[in-house]
Length: 444
Image (cartoon, rainbow, N blue to C red; front, side, top):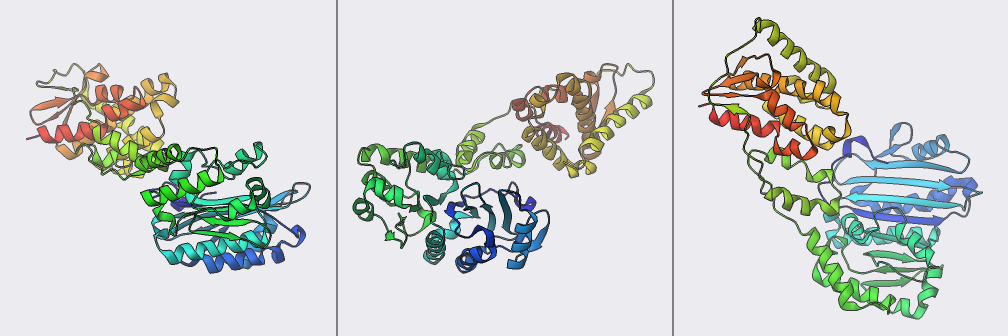
C-alpha cells in the first residue's frame, strides 16, 4: 500500500520491518489486536500514524481501524493501511489471515527517514514495540533493517528471508539484520545456547522461546565499519560454515555501494538529472548519481547559421497547424504534466522527465510516435522558443526543416523532437531542456 502524497518521496533510506505472527483469537480481532495497537502507540513516538485507509481515508483512531477491518473483510483475510501525512513518513500495512489459512497477523512497516533511528531513544522504543508484538504474536522470524541494504542483500520483499530459510527447514541464516526475532524452530536449529551467546548489542530470550537479537544500538548506523564487523561476527557465529573475512568483505562492499555521492550534474541538465535517481531502487541511487555525474550530453546539432527561405504558400495556415499540434500535446498531457499549460522552460524539463519515467519511446508504437507525438513535441518546443526567447517561426513544407529564428541562429525544433523520441537514452542525449538552454546562450 502507498498513500498518494508520498509516492516518489524516497529521497532517503527507510527502516523496514517485516513481521508475521500467529493470531490466537481470530474471531474477536478487536480484542486480539489490543496489545498490537497499544505497543504501536507507545513505540511509534515521532512517527505515529495519523491516517487509516481502506476504501476511504480517515483520521487515526481505533474505531476507524475496527470499521475498516470489518469493511475489508473477505473469506480469508482483511487489511488496513496506516500512514503519516507529515515528516517523518510512515507507510504501514496490517493484514489478518483467517482459517482455513493459518491465523496470522502480517505487518509491513516502513519509516522514513532512516536517520530518525540514529537516536538511541527512538531505537529503544522501536525494540520495545517489536518485543511486545513478538510475545503476543509468536513469529517464526521477523526483521527490521535499512531498506537499501535489504535490497542489496536480496531481501527487499515481505518475509523473503523467512521464505528462503523455510526451504532449508529453518536451519540456515541467510542474513542477520539490525533487529531480528528468531522463533523457537530457528533457535533450536542453531542451538539455544549458541543463539543466546551470539555477540551482539542485545540478545534476549522471550517467554515463548523466541529470541530477540539486535546487532547495534542504532539502526541508522548499520553501514559504519564497527557495525559491519558486529554484523559479520553475529552471522558467522550463527553459521559456523561461513568464512568471516568473506562475509565482512561482502558487507563492506554493500556499505561502499550505499555511500553518499555528491551530485555534480551537467549544469544545463541539472534540473532534469537531479530527478532521475529517485526513480530507481534506494540501493541503486548512489551508483546512478555517479553515472549521471559523468554524463555529458552531445552539443545540439539541430541549428543552422543561415535560415532556409520559406517555401510555403500560406505561412499563417502552416503556423496554425503547428499551434494545433502543440495544443494537442497540452490536451493529452496536462493532467500528468500540469506545467505544460504554461509553456515555460521549466515545462520542458517536466516533459523530459515524464517521457523518461514512462520510457515513452520504447513503450509506445513507433508509428504513433513518429506520426503524432514527435511532431507535437516539436511544435511545443518551437512555441517555447518563440515565447521566451523572442523567436520567430520560419515554416517549411518539410516539417523537420521548419525553423525558429533566435538571434543570429535558426533552430530546428521538429528535427530535435524526432531525434529526441528515438529511445529512452535519446531523451537525455537530445533533451528539450538542453536544446532550450543552448538556444538561450546563443540569443545574444
